[in-house]
Image (cartoon, rainbow, N blue to C red; front, side, top):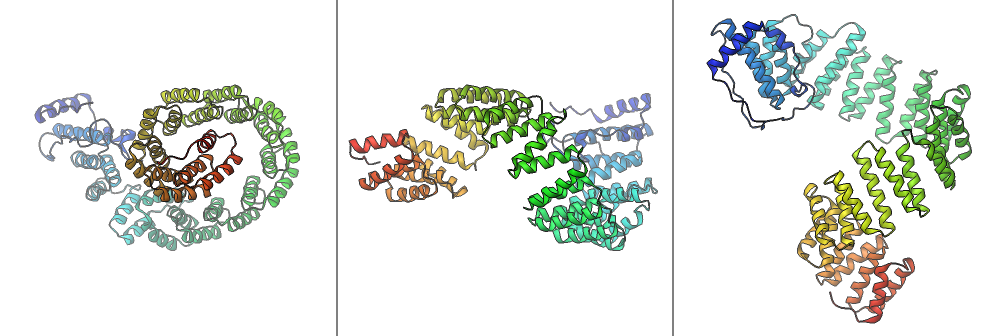
Length: 602
C-alpha cells in the first residue's frame, strides 16, 4: 500500500480542529485506547506495510502556540502518527511522537505510553524525558516504580534501582508476589548484569522467600546454575511448601545431566508432600530417567494398590512395564484401561504396540484399527503402513499413508507421509510413480527442501539430470550450508563428468561441514577419480568403505583399483562385495565388465 500524502499543515490543523471540537474527542480517551498488537509493548516490532525506510511527516512541536483546539488537534495528529509508526515497526520514532503528544496534551496516560514505548526501543533520552513528565503530571501514581527501576538500571545506578524497589514493594503477600514477577519480566531483558542487583535485593529482604525465588528464576534464565541452586535452597528453607522451587531445583540438575541429584531433590519433595500423588508420579518418572526403573515400578505399583481407580496412575504403570519389556503386566493394565471408554483408544494403540513387539502383526493391525477417531490415528496408520510394507502389501501401505496425510493437521506431518510413501515406491523399484508422487507433493508444498531432495534423487535415476541439478541448486539457494545437497549436487556433476572443478568445490565444502560422512568421502573419491587422481581417490574411497561397506562405495573402489591396473585387488574386493549384495545391479555390471574387457582409464 502506498504512503498517504501529508496534508498541508494549515489545512490539516483546521480539519482536525473541527473534528476534535465537533465530536468532543478527548485526548485522555484517545490515549486510553490500546494500540494494536503491532505497537509492540510485548513483542519485537516488525515492519509492516510500507518500506522500513519511509519517513513520517512530523509536525514541529509548537507548545503554547495557537488556540487550545489547535494544540489538541496537533496532539491528536501526533498520536495518530505514533500509532502508524508503531505499526510500521518504527518503535523509537513512535516513542518520540508519544512524548510530543504528551507535552502538548499534558495527559499522564499519553506520557505513560511514551515511557513504555521508548523503554521498549531502548531510547534512554526519550524515556527519561517522558518519565519526568509523567512524574510531574501524576506524582502519586503507584504503578510507575518498575519503569523507574528499569531506567536506573540502564543508567548503571543499581543503588537507586534497589532503593526504588525496596520502597515500593507491596506488603500484602499476593500483591507482593505479582510485583516481583512484574519486576523480573521487565529486568530480565537487560541481560545477566541484573543478577548482582537481584542478589542485593534478596539480601535486603533476607527473610522473603519471593525475593530469593526471583533471583533463582533470573539465574536459571542465564544458566547461572550455582547461583540458581543456592537461591532455590534458600527459598525452600524459608518456605518449605513452595513446590515450584523444588521442581526448578530438580530440573536444574537434570538440565546439567546430573539425574542422581535431581532425584534426591524430588525425594525430599515427596517427603515434604506425602499426599501429593501427581508429585509421586513425577518422582517415579525421574527415577526411571535416572536408570532406576525397578524402584520406579515398585513405587508406582504400591501407589496403584492404594488408588486402583486412578487411571492416570494405571496408564503410567502400563507404559513403564511396556518400556521394560514386561509384556504381561503391560497387557493386564492396558486391557483394564481399554474397558474405560475415555481411555479405550489410547489403550488400543499401546496394545497394538505390544502386539508388534511380540511379532503378532495381525493382532496389532486389529488394535490399531480401533484408534481411528483418537489422537493416535495418524501414528497408528503409519505403523499399519509399516506392517503392510514389511509384508509386501505395497498398495495397502500407500493407502494407509494417504489416509494419514488426510488426517494430518500440519504441513510437516504431510511432508513426512509423502516421503514415506515415496520410500515405499523406491523400495519397490517403482521410480516413475515415486517421481510423480513427489511432483504432486511439491504442488502442495512448493519449495519444501526434503521434497526437492527426494525429487532430485529420483530424477537422477530417471535420467532427468537438468531437473535434478535445478532441484539441488534450489535447496542450496535456501540453505547454502546444506551438506547433503552440496554433496548430492557435486556427485551428480561428477557422475555426468561435467563441471568437475565446481563439483570438487561443492564436495570439499560438504566434507568440511560433515567430515565423518562416508557418502561425502565416497563422492570426493569419485570426483578425484574423474579428475584422474587415482592415488588420492583410492585413499578417500578406502576411508569411506571403512565406515560403510555399501555396494556403491565398493564399486567405486573397484573401478579405481582396476584403473590402476590392480586387477587382482579389484577382483578380490568385487567378489567380497557380491557376497554381501549378490543382486546389486552396479556390482553385477562391474563383474561383467571386468570379465569381458580391460579397464579403461578415467
